Image 1 (cartoon, rainbow, N blue to C red):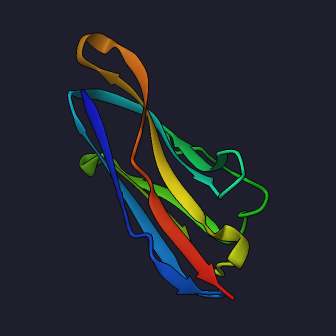
Image 2 (image 1 turned 30 degrees about the vertical axis):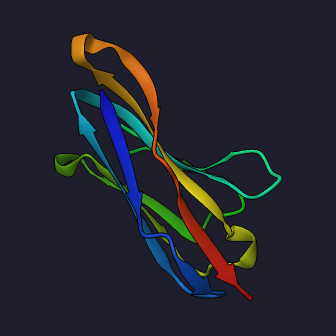
Length: 120
Protein backbone atom coordinates (compact mmCIF):
# COMPACT_ATOMS: atom_id res chain seq x y z
CA UNK A 1 0.00 0.00 0.00
CA UNK A 2 2.91 2.35 0.67
CA UNK A 3 6.21 2.39 -1.17
CA UNK A 4 9.44 4.11 -0.20
CA UNK A 5 12.10 4.81 -2.80
CA UNK A 6 15.54 6.06 -1.77
CA UNK A 7 18.11 7.75 -3.96
CA UNK A 8 21.39 9.61 -3.67
CA UNK A 9 23.81 6.99 -2.45
CA UNK A 10 27.16 6.74 -4.17
CA UNK A 11 30.93 6.60 -3.66
CA UNK A 12 32.38 9.73 -2.07
CA UNK A 13 35.72 10.67 -0.57
CA UNK A 14 36.15 11.23 3.16
CA UNK A 15 35.25 14.80 4.08
CA UNK A 16 32.72 15.03 1.28
CA UNK A 17 28.95 15.47 1.34
CA UNK A 18 25.91 13.61 0.08
CA UNK A 19 22.18 14.17 0.21
CA UNK A 20 19.89 11.16 0.36
CA UNK A 21 16.24 11.41 -0.61
CA UNK A 22 13.31 9.13 0.09
CA UNK A 23 9.89 9.52 -1.48
CA UNK A 24 6.82 7.85 0.00
CA UNK A 25 3.91 7.03 -2.27
CA UNK A 26 0.72 5.03 -2.20
CA UNK A 27 -2.44 5.19 -0.11
CA UNK A 28 -1.09 7.58 2.50
CA UNK A 29 -3.43 9.34 4.87
CA UNK A 30 -0.80 10.67 7.26
CA UNK A 31 2.92 10.27 7.79
CA UNK A 32 3.70 10.21 11.52
CA UNK A 33 7.47 9.96 11.30
CA UNK A 34 10.23 9.24 8.83
CA UNK A 35 13.75 8.20 9.45
CA UNK A 36 17.02 6.88 8.12
CA UNK A 37 18.73 3.72 9.29
CA UNK A 38 21.97 2.17 8.13
CA UNK A 39 23.53 -1.25 8.11
CA UNK A 40 27.16 -2.04 7.48
CA UNK A 41 28.33 -5.58 6.66
CA UNK A 42 28.32 -7.71 9.78
CA UNK A 43 26.55 -5.07 11.83
CA UNK A 44 22.99 -4.64 12.98
CA UNK A 45 20.77 -2.01 11.44
CA UNK A 46 20.99 1.21 13.43
CA UNK A 47 19.03 4.42 13.59
CA UNK A 48 20.81 7.37 12.02
CA UNK A 49 18.16 10.07 12.30
CA UNK A 50 14.41 10.39 12.59
CA UNK A 51 11.95 13.24 12.32
CA UNK A 52 8.40 13.31 13.60
CA UNK A 53 5.28 15.06 12.44
CA UNK A 54 5.72 18.49 13.93
CA UNK A 55 9.41 18.62 13.13
CA UNK A 56 11.19 17.23 16.19
CA UNK A 57 14.22 15.19 15.25
CA UNK A 58 16.78 12.97 16.90
CA UNK A 59 20.17 11.73 15.76
CA UNK A 60 22.63 8.99 16.55
CA UNK A 61 25.54 10.37 18.56
CA UNK A 62 27.94 9.36 15.81
CA UNK A 63 26.34 11.72 13.29
CA UNK A 64 25.32 14.69 15.43
CA UNK A 65 26.65 17.91 14.00
CA UNK A 66 27.38 16.30 10.62
CA UNK A 67 24.01 15.00 9.38
CA UNK A 68 20.72 16.84 9.09
CA UNK A 69 17.31 15.28 8.50
CA UNK A 70 14.50 17.27 6.93
CA UNK A 71 11.18 16.72 5.20
CA UNK A 72 9.04 18.18 2.46
CA UNK A 73 5.52 17.34 3.56
CA UNK A 74 3.95 18.36 0.29
CA UNK A 75 6.12 15.81 -1.50
CA UNK A 76 6.06 13.07 1.19
CA UNK A 77 9.84 13.20 1.03
CA UNK A 78 12.55 12.95 3.66
CA UNK A 79 16.13 14.03 3.11
CA UNK A 80 19.37 13.26 4.87
CA UNK A 81 22.11 15.81 4.32
CA UNK A 82 25.41 14.19 5.22
CA UNK A 83 28.50 16.37 5.61
CA UNK A 84 32.05 15.63 6.72
CA UNK A 85 31.61 12.01 5.75
CA UNK A 86 33.89 9.40 7.29
CA UNK A 87 34.80 5.88 6.12
CA UNK A 88 32.82 4.52 9.07
CA UNK A 89 29.67 6.05 7.55
CA UNK A 90 29.90 3.43 4.80
CA UNK A 91 26.71 1.36 4.84
CA UNK A 92 23.44 0.67 3.12
CA UNK A 93 21.06 3.44 4.16
CA UNK A 94 17.39 2.56 4.53
CA UNK A 95 14.43 4.88 4.68
CA UNK A 96 11.68 4.13 7.17
CA UNK A 97 8.21 5.63 7.53
CA UNK A 98 5.51 5.34 10.17
CA UNK A 99 2.34 5.81 8.14
CA UNK A 100 -1.41 5.82 8.51
CA UNK A 101 -2.68 4.37 5.24
CA UNK A 102 -6.12 3.33 3.98
CA UNK A 103 -8.58 2.83 6.81
CA UNK A 104 -6.17 4.59 9.16
CA UNK A 105 -4.15 1.42 9.47
CA UNK A 106 -0.80 2.32 11.00
CA UNK A 107 2.28 0.49 9.80
CA UNK A 108 6.02 0.76 9.40
CA UNK A 109 7.43 0.71 5.88
CA UNK A 110 10.97 0.31 4.56
CA UNK A 111 12.72 1.25 1.38
CA UNK A 112 15.05 -1.01 -0.54
CA UNK A 113 18.19 0.78 0.60
CA UNK A 114 20.84 2.89 -1.07
CA UNK A 115 24.58 2.25 -0.82
CA UNK A 116 26.84 4.94 0.61
CA UNK A 117 30.56 4.26 0.36
CA UNK A 118 33.10 6.66 1.83
CA UNK A 119 36.69 6.16 0.72
CA UNK A 120 39.63 7.20 2.87
